[in-house]
Length: 286
Ligand SMILES: C[S@@+](CC[C@H](N)C(=O)[O-])C[C@H]1O[C@@H](n2cnc3c(N)ncnc32)[C@H](O)[C@@H]1O
Image 1 (cartoon, rainbow, N blue to C red):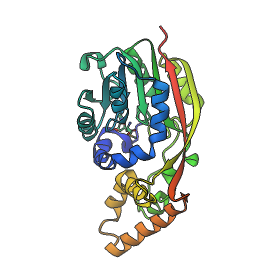
Image 2: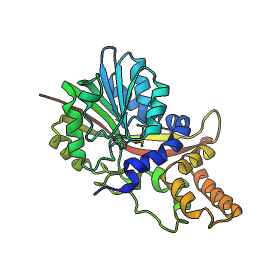
Image 3: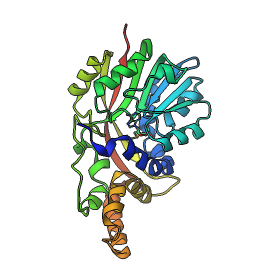
């Protein structure tokens, strides 16, 4: 069943906040980028597809290595940001689950498919991964990072977020494994099964842990963490539900309470939030 929090219109609503905070996301998720780029082994003459490319972090890394790069994203603000950031890339606006990459991009068939947190939002993930595989070359590789369980990832319910969601009048159900959303693939066996169903071989799903350091240029990272909360789903819901309900000073008190909660994650001078992910690799064996 589709979760409307993660459909194209919600991504379109949320993309601006993501793009405005691109520097923070890139700094905090640098270990994830490094892991995906390391496993992808980009090189010249490679044709690379980045699924759910957002504002183009991986596209930029692949282009820098001399690869021919194609990105796809369902949100137009993301697509525009990626085009600005990587002018040499072909960036498609569309749903990777059903897009005809052969017709839309001269880059197909691809040698490498990559994604950083962009493949967990499909209604029918097996169909989506099969569609993507259809446009890959024999022995092409896929490398992506996705989240493990919500209980292992305070980035969703903790570190300032819970303080704000507790005040919502209509609190959304937490994202659930097996449903479109950030923790869709928390269950490794479920993910392995659907990649196999989609025809991918040599599937490897390894735990990957990192600390998301929010300190940028010497900051303690508290404002950076708060900015990312306010820029994404929790912040959007808070503005929708609490504007006009809380006075300005009550809103500021709420933000101060969130800051206090975030400060609990300060370690060695900056906010460091643990992240629990899977690093996934698979091959298109014909
Ligand atoms: C969590 S963001 C990650 C963005 C980017 N990969 C990054 O790491 O900065 C997820 C991205 O996937 C995109 N997305 C979600 N569903 C999609 C779909 N069905 N097809 C293409 N892109 C999708 C969203 O618009 C969003 O840009």
